Length: 257
Image (tube, rainbow, N blue to C red; front, side):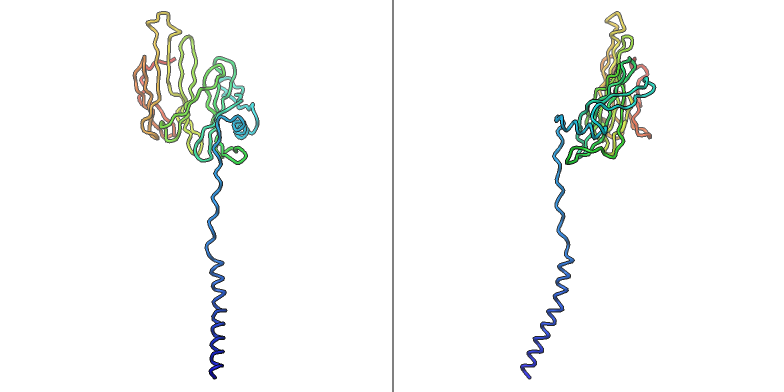
């Protein structure tokens, strides 16, 4: 009887172990999966590399240069011709590609700058899902000159400056574009900056010059233009309900062409 008792006990232990094994196996199968490996980070684009600039141009315009875009009808129509551009890093793998467009050769014919957003890829770039922006200005088809200014707006601001000479009066102003995360946005259409009547007066003592400088105020609410020379006014440009900035206190006698 003792031998039988031990045998039955041994069978009970084996049965219990058999019952526990599937549960442990199931527990192992339902354990949390290992975290996926981090996606490789693409190296930053080199804005001086001609090959990368060529890839960026093709991604922006869907072709190699030259590319064309229609000019405004009020400036005589025709096309802007774009042959090259530059890259601006926006953070992460996003870039703005700014290309210069030559317009017609008439005095009132503007040039242009086009701003496309691009996404870095292992093979180069692809155009991001953001509408491009074309800003025109200037005379004789020359494109605006542009720089990037930090601190003026919540995102970097592209300042496109253009002007001309009319009967001896020289004037230039700036279009202010915010390189916002979603897309480029024209925030101020034309900010008066520089003025000179030196080519229109005979008496040098009557010559006047004025220079304007964009200065930060409260990003996202307003910025200012500080003038020197013929005017020392400080004009505040304030954000309006339509998303653009407008002058709030521009003097009526501010010299201009």
